[in-house]
Image (cartoon, rainbow over all chains, first blue to last red; front, side):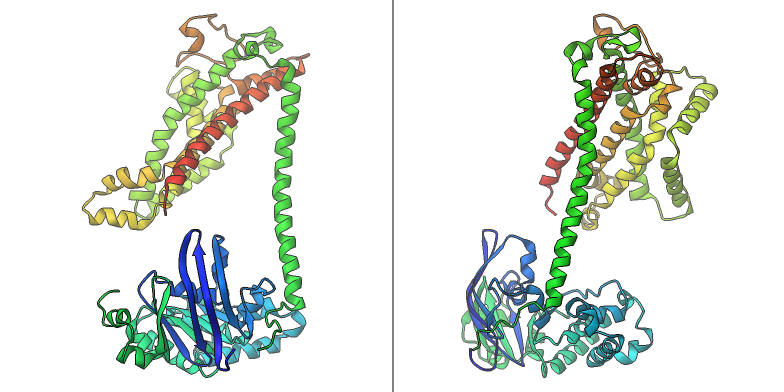
Length: 256
Length: 302
């Protein structure tokens, strides 16, 4: 695997029952940048995103073929523990989904499921909560009410918290499935700022319906259509000089 | 490219998987254990009832206080009692459930109604029996008999129907209602064409529970005209409809109660025989309704 590649996808196909949602796609997603998956509804972008930490499998009737290599290992192999995989590859969902427990407990939830009690004394947890919340710039607003229920926060704060709770596990990759679609304009702006901050440390893959957001917030774009990858180029190239006529038509908003 | 696996579970995570498996097995064990008493009860009753069972037992008259003959009279009594109870309680309960869920504003009055319904559900059946006696017989001057017994059972089972109707209605997604209103449908039109047909399965669950309770209860009917023995016409239409609305009647639950405790020297197979018939009747109705519900649910696509 080349250096600088974070996710290496080779001839990857996925079926929901008999319906083939991904038709042998290949791509290399680079480390330390933001890659957007764009394309019309039903093109398979969310399915591809969800494959990167195998969260699709819960639905039972999913079958796959091909390779997705992360950290030098095909994550579809049978000796991969999905719990260990999801520790390294975290996910942020479309609607903020903080757990209905305290803010503090939300942030340490991942540590509690991955580390034995002896390795997470109170001081370690406290420290992890503070640095995670600082990183998403929630610390100053929330530090005096860490035992409040997380579901009482505003949607923007909830979504930031959902990002923050991945951080104590030190993931390599953060997947985001339309992370801003439930937020208002100012919330979107601050989440995008946060994502840009985070790419120094993490590889970020984001699904978005919002062309303007893909253009503003990402470094590379992957355009998908009917379960195939049509084009994968730096964002600016894709918007200024699309290679494929279907890409051009989509970006111009002629279908969508 | 290294061949080492970066996604090996830590020993803590392996431990956790072990605990997860244990949790799965213990929930499974408890669920299976639940079946054991059911299976034991059914087998025991079926074995002990076996010598008594025959077509003649089902269709024969009760004789020698239940020590001989069959159970035709009580069987018919339970059938008509349950049917009558359903005919009274289903329309009232479903309409009340529709009002409470679809129309009633959230105010003190509605909450008072709901508290009343919940309290009604908690009243012991013997108290319902006394209520029926006081209200229908003593105050309204109605005769003890099939109708007043069914009315008493209806009061008792009303909360079941109301509650299950409400739950069934609330399982119909709100956006169907909005779509209807948006196309100019009135509230009633929406309820009649979309909401009710799609909550039929849930409402049916309530009806099943009512059947099971109405057929099984003894206390409310034993003050209300259920008797030990009546002469049943040997043939003709009166064999199939032995009781008038105001007549006293026999019923399986009451029959079982009396022959089990009041008649000395009762052969065991006669007691277990009527227990088995009552049980089978209820299980059969439940099974039938579950089948209907399953078919309806398969049609749903949301």
